[in-house]
Length: 85
Ligand SMILES: [Zn+2]
Image 1 (tube, rainbow, N blue to C red):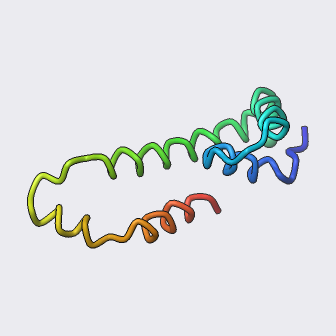
Image 2: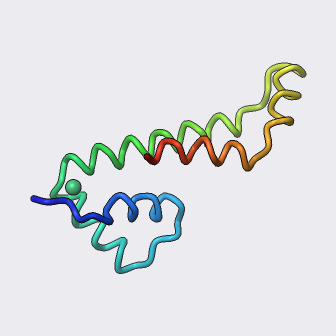
């Protein structure tokens, strides 16, 4: 089965919660039938969960806190997007 060209785009839209219902339906149907995309989707989810969990962790020391404070949110977002290649 050939993967739709836009299925990866849908994954990103879904994870960004910017997908519309129609596309979400297509994405879910495809994931049910395509193990390859399924595992890719799980990799994306894991990457995002990891980033989200680390951004919620309380810094154990002032040093780490200061470093985290200096990281602009925008920049973290860019590094997340690198996972999406
Ligand atoms: Zn596929």
